[in-house]
Image 1 (spheres, rainbow, N blue to C red):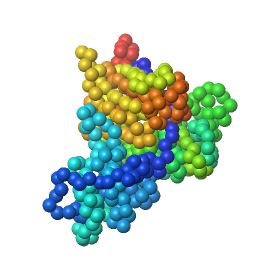
Image 2: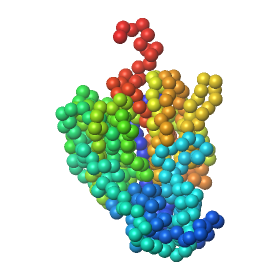
Image 3: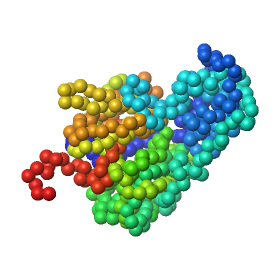
Image 4: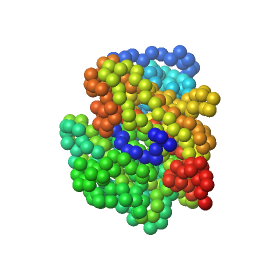
Length: 454
């Protein structure tokens, strides 16, 4: 399979949510006027009738109390002061955040506003942000308190808070949480909720079955790092595992919601292993992240597994403006492609997923103008059936020059590493396979079974 793997691990870093949304909604637009929209409707849009439905559909998942955005956009009183900056943000297509090149693929979770919706917001702002008739408002959208999924059937919380310093780099931190499941569970929805989102660059939650030897000498119920483990092999295992991945959290990422008849599998007696990457921002804090699970109401027909294409051998020379790195692999068995999640660090510029056909032609599934501070999952509008032997390719481009405002050191030769000053090239992708096929069975190729008794 080459570099197509079940889960090696290492993710990465550095994003402060309040900074992210400030860039999207405020700092980029200070002092900029809002121009009139060419196709102005005959009647002036009002908040309750025209703007609020857009906010409910496209914005309130983040812009409501208790969520990542620094301002709520639920009521008229909350929204009106931001009218002109909202108009500027949507006209420049900075909000809602979405980075897929529209020439390639169609995605179910594309939050982009239509031209009509952009026009409604800009016309409303230009007209002085009128409220209109409150009776014209749609019913308030109902959200599960504290979650973007329905109220979870099970919540696993890190047993002890992790203390985060105000400055410096923080080593990846782990906590192992016993589920005490007495029966196998099928997870249809999952969401990670950091208690200090401003300090959590990523969280990866792994499924450790009861028969897994992974990190068996590590403490359970308390935070630890790889350097704290006495066994050199376990120190290595902390960064690379074949355990199934339950889900990944990164800035801007949405909860996992699998279609009816699809779910992830957690065997009875499993532990959940939290891998946390914290970044400092000048303020000390503590974090005690949780993951909420919604179980499938009936056994699914298909199991969802997360795979990845990665290239650990990347070496990016100093000053390179458009350095290309690629990796290819072939699927060992049939699978249904569901979603794509590209990952790089601060020098990331573009990321692409392709199918390379037998005749050499290339079909691009997704091309992302990469934004390190908004790492999104791209869910296919229609699942794509892929046959065994399909060749998948991931291509990444990096900007290690002085033209990259996020580049920490354009004079550095950059290689793979955990910290943001290093780089990564990981193309996560989710596939659905028959429910009875676990990840180990999936990686058995048909040719591997030839001549063997069943």
